[in-house]
Image 1: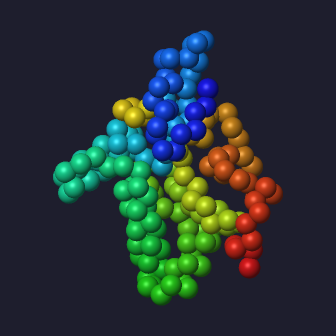
Image 2: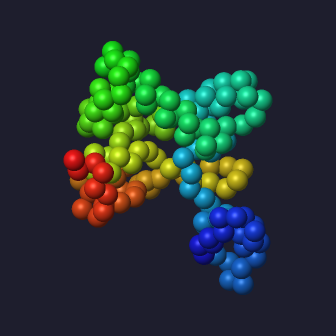
Length: 161
């Protein structure tokens, strides 16, 4: 069962309360996000501890997303030995750019729409359950392209110029 409740008004009532037992995903039960506060793989434990020490709270997806954005700019500036916008932007958009992001694989940006290619953490509010893309979903260029719109499907024109 998929529950869509962005305002979190009723979604919590669905897990374990369906007439016929069914897994619940979406706004309740299992959710997909860029980060999970209990992720411990790929150096995540140390990363979480450093964040906790600096901020006196657990890291949430919005914190992780801000960290990745900062890391992308820093990584590009370090590799290109430059700080000007055009040089960094062109390198970040190129197929040569990738950045380590505590996800077990290098993340990068899609050349056709600028979307960050990254694994998504599937979990409950308290525990990560799985990391997507799920095993067995293959793609001709990158396993991370099994998530989201692929090049032939995109309607984005911003990156074609």
